[in-house]
Amino acid sequence: MSVQISKEITEQVVLITGGARGLGACLVRAFAGQGAKVVINYLNSEAAAFALAAEFPEQAIAIRADVCDAQAVAAMFAQAAKHFEAPISTVVNNALPNFQFNGDARPHADTLTWEHLQHQMEGIVRGALNTTQAALPGMEQSGFGRIINIGTNLFQNPVVPYHDYTAAKAALLSFTRTLSHDLGPKGVTVNMISGGLLRTTDASAATPEAVFDLIAQSTPLRRVTSPAEFADAALFFASPWSRAVTGQNLVVDGGLVKN
Image (cartoon, rainbow, N blue to C red; front, side, top):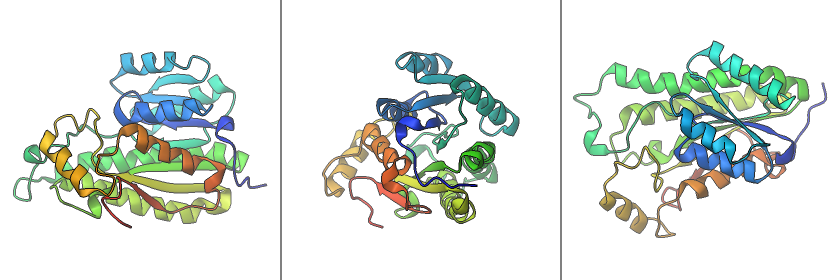
């Protein structure tokens, strides 16, 4: 097998899980804006997904699938490959189980349950496992693949008790690193992009304004990163410019957290 080190973004078929709203929609627009073909995965946001796909009628398709369901994910990959006459080459694992970034409303140590943790692990880690396994046959056939996992800076700076969410994202970082070692010989890179609070997504809409202001004052850039700015960083990991980068975690939060 001949391993391809890189492909231009215009040559890629990119899956964005949870792509209909919030950060996912910004990721879709970032990749489509650079000429990629994009699969907009959604679970409940059908109207938003199809409206977004209509913005890029020649480049985008909206497909419903629960990323926790391996059979549904496999069917999504098959549908996308048939539609674009090419397999998915790039996976952005962005889908997030139901969650609101409001520290006052999250369970603390005395009320946290295993069900809270399991819910996040299922959606974040199991979802990434399912999409990775569904993507591998096409990536191996072409000798090229990009897996980009969406993380958080909270496991480096756990200032808010998002125990369940943070634990699942930390597990996803470990999975990113072990996958990078396993899949590198196949021409597949696996990386993570970790943000802080983004201003503003559906998940962060419940965050008090004072929290946004505090974060902005704490960053070197004196502002909170936007979803569109965060999405731009994903283009780097998909592009030829990152052909020698794998197993890495890039923090995109305006400099709040230093690696």
